[in-house]
Image (cartoon, helix red, strand yellow):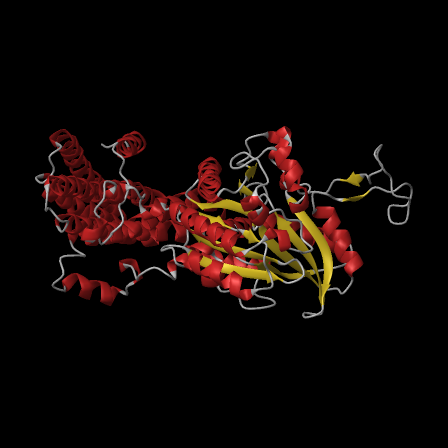
Length: 614
């Protein structure tokens, strides 16, 4: 019998070694056939591994909307980039812009925006209340999904060097992109501001990391730019049933990293203690990576705790919320809800929902939609205004701009689309759909078992299996579209021009890459569908006996997915010239087909035995 753990890990390793990344369905015209054509067919990861970063440039113009709009236009002109927020400030004469997308597109949009700002903003004439030293003052990149901080820092460094080389702007790298530890803090990099830039550039200790070191005519106009990679910042407010800003501040000071000033004697009225440099001494608060104050919001008629969570890898919203409840209760105050300012990554909200589900001893292996509902209600995010995940979660904002996917179809629409004259979606997408259905049934049995009366002490056991099933289910849903996209990629490759030898070779290589992908994706459907059968086996053996037939139907669907996807691997094998790859993959296909049939038989034997005993 197939070893789930060793078998799946070996297959996963082979998958990674063979660079099994999903390619985008790109419609390539004759005009854009270039040397990088082949790369375009396989440069993007699968949708499950989609990389998303955020960029939050601060431009030194907050009063002239004509200038601001021209900068925004170049950002919006980059395909795949979603403009999320624009916040101009007249007093600061500064505009904060937020946009997201895949790294390459975001970096391109950022470069265009910096270039436009350099053309339109003259720093020699700039006045404003906020510290600044450049037309594009700061340019941070923030990892959102599927990308590490180190990778994001690499993009930041490449972007900064390009700005320096092509636009002649001095660049300082800070935070996670910092080349020197002393430049990690933005305030240190920007010390002296624009007015002190001539002296800063002339100082060998503070020469730019890239770009000109002299205060020439160009730099006089553009100033310098600080480029970074940093953690996502969540602006999060907690609502109180009081109007007292004093109490609100007291609670905020308990929680924020900076804490409160230390006083001699009476903690409220005593003399402030100072260090040897004459600076106030602070008693550290409870949460690192959190800034906070208390204030009164006239619009709502309540006091709030206003927090910035600057290190979302260490601190979550539910930690802040729970501490706020605890510290408020100590003062006879109740937290009534909270407010999310701006947008947030999906994972941050899922973490909240899962935390509160676990507190209730409930399974977390449920749909993201249900987890988000728990998160919103638990934090009271809808107390002051409706909370719409499609407008507040970054990944959903991006999905709103993308074409409709097969997984977004109703069952009726999907079956009608499959039955149409179009060759896709076809057997591969249907196999993935069957696999997703099977995994969903196994997950359902696990969730029902986790909440079964009298089994309360087993909720963690069944939550494990529910999460395992949900992971398989979610990936198989993605593979429904990926299989169709793989087929379309083959069609696109065959449609490439072949006027000369170079174009013919490019077309041939593109066809081979696309064909290989059209084998790898259904093979992944096989892998995930087979691995999901482990959930059905466990649920047939130990799950809610009233749902054992559902586990049986689940394994039948998973088995059909494996065998159906295998046919899609085989039908593309003859077109691939890499015969060694074909031989190895087909060997794995045959082995997995045999193991699937054997496992199906074992599970159905258990199911039928239990049904017969009812």
